[in-house]
Image 1 (spheres, one colour):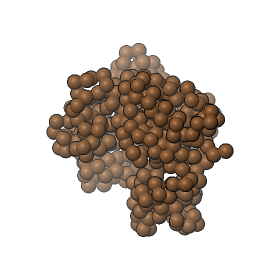
Image 2 (cartoon, rainbow, N blue to C red):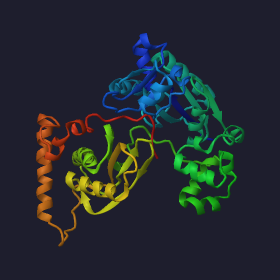
Image 3 (cartoon, rainbow, N blue to C red):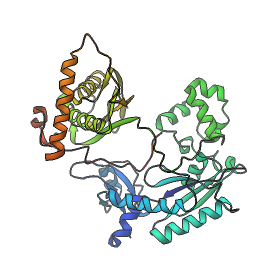
Length: 413
């Protein structure tokens, strides 16, 4: 039996919810974004009116203002969005328990076993109507026999639309599209494909798998599979949470960073947040996936380093991150944003191997110190105890990434 997979995408989700709750801005160009004064400054989502001005998700607030001077920017209300997301998922659950979230605003549904003789388009139309009538927002739904093409279908026509991508028509619908329209093909992969003369999904599909494997390794096989409609990955049952693979934080800085001392302050704040979250979740990590740096021309790079032992000590994470930064950044331009994360995680109960060339007793004292500081911060606030370096520039250090986290409107592979 051929599977029936739906991908439902709430159109302009954050902005749609804001306009629903604030009728006075419903007919204006609206975007949900960060703090303009603090420059936590990207567009998370925008409504259809703002799209007419070519305002783009992910661009800086100042860039969006240049395109649309009358743009209404509202701060994100994550609790409200979470509530609407849960209401949408309750509707999806009326059709199947195979509901796999992809961010707050998107879900895959496998309705094969629950179709009661109905085709995917009929089920999608019913869901689309219920979301509009019961929640007051719109969705675009892709209908297909696999997850990749279902996602492509929901992106194909917006807003408030349904697109079927089946075995009989995927060559006409999917293959003429840019290869970047294929899920998980990011800008770096797109650039590499274009260097080889591959511009569309059809180009990708018709490239021999052996050739793609030579260029991309195992990932080349996956790309070929996706482009040819051969994805057979299952829709996960709702509630089956994936294993935590990394913990990280990033921030857009209040002002451009121009020297190592500025970066040292920001990296310590971020590393401290990452370390606290690791301890709270019972993990240690070994690979510092730092440093994700974006300069004031919005050019970015990421570097990583595998440490000799697992850690959740803030000072070790920040020192490793700073060392990576100093090794790889040449200060050709000021920095606008920076991030740090830890991967290769293990439970913190896993015994660590002793190292004769390292002060193990000192590391143990640092662990105890960090946990004592955690207790103080939980009781008296995140700024109750700080190292002296953070007191040298309160503008840079006066933020709490653990509290002021951002829920991104997209998922990552």
